[in-house]
Length: 433
Image 1 (tube, helix red, strand yellow):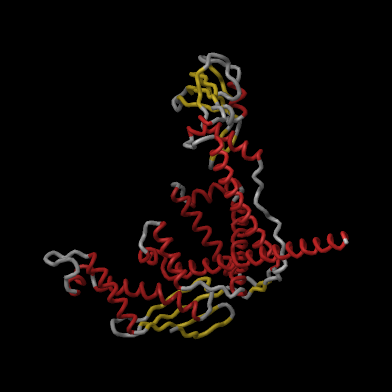
Image 2: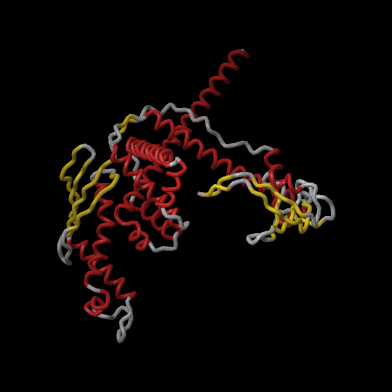
């Protein structure tokens, strides 16, 4: 049971009471899992007394597991019961004991009040790209290019060749260069040369990552020259790609291109619709909300850099030296504001449409997400935590609202088209009479 304690502006506080029966059920579930998973010498699986198991895992572990299980379930349920869409929240759990009611208090911030412009008559212009015969042929030729072979030739190098070169110097090595995609200074230096020639390639000044490279010269030797061999566009080529015939390849490829085009069109319509909502929204967005989103995005960037072995302090210092730090932070702020506005309009849209995600729907999507990540639903819930589960639930509501709104617009457009066609037919019949 959830009870609203206070609500001032977008700050909210509420209390949740979990009945003793549900607390006992959570304890039973945790103990059942431990009895199944914890092996105790001298006892068959599932037969060790709780006191013995508790001695191996610790009493604190059991209580923490039960507390986490209760918070994961009842925090999200309480927010839904009170119709609160929380941006962020802190949870203060009270004492937990078997056979007693468990209570916790939540303090958080809700999204600010948002007003959307009337979108019911909006006409979305984005459409799926047309898959013409030209597009199909271009894609087939791309397949030929990707499956091309190369044969050695004794002649001067041409622009489409694959050239194997040996670079001089301590850091040199032998590697192939595909001239059809090589940079101009490389292609220009090699075209016209032959196998065995020594060539000097002038590399212009350029930036690479966080390093500046001055203009310099690389000396290489041409080891081999190969010409590209494209397969004929016939049944044999289709067979090499595991298709029965060229006609079957064309048919299946066109179907796949049309499927992707449809997805691209749907994505474009979604973006067009969201942009229209953002452009027409009215909201007083707290600076704290923007700052929190910006800080969250910055932490993601730091984590990404860390996975690449780059420390944020070093990267920040480099940008400062290059005079790019201010622009970087300004762009980060703009992106944070854009994301917040998107979240706000989608949240309001779902609210206006009275969108609901049932417990069955939510559990099905959680189970599917867990399976996709090689986790059990319980493991996924533990990883996400109460705030993460609530955020996931909100994302499902927003997505469902967006789909519903676009379906309404598509239906209105279809009805409008049918009405126009009917009017045109009636007008034609009148003229004929």
